[in-house]
Image (cartoon, rainbow, N blue to C red; front, side, top):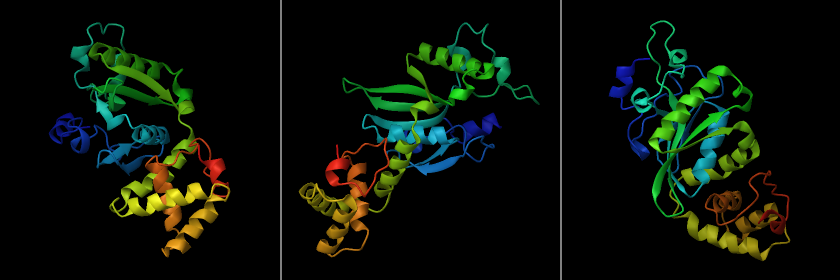
Length: 255
């Protein structure tokens, strides 16, 4: 793995745009589908090793209270932090050939704004619910739990059952509009569309965005793009756990 090389590369260090994850998707084969995705809040590429991690990332990013997301966060000082290690199976996490201790990572460390307006860190581990009864999984989770407990950081496990596919699909569909070009040109037109939608609550969304394109004399599809943008900016609120059906009336799709 090259521990010294990883440290030299700055892995597990930095915040925001400067953070470098400990593991990148090309470092080893992933059991799930690995994804490289540009972060809207961080302005950097995030390396996610499974569909569940991607869904969690999208959920975190959409949360207004989350201001930084660090994936594959290494517990480099775990041996010093945890005092009573006798009943922890660190031997399970060693290189089979060299016997070298492997670096244990927590999937996500988030910087969030708490209820009092303070910046705090929380740690989240993503696990498939079918793996929770495996002994090796339990051993790793217990190490993480004790580590973050000593650090005074809120740590929780999130399973696939808490990460609905449809929510993630909707988030991906709308967030793309935040990644492209400058937002300055979108604001005036999206505000006009917003008003147009509210004036046509009994019409189907697809018809409203189509007529918007015609009335404004703009390229076909612009209205739909701006509809997605309004959801991404939270100027329109819809049920993200259901498929966004453009055939529904505006009044039936907006919350």
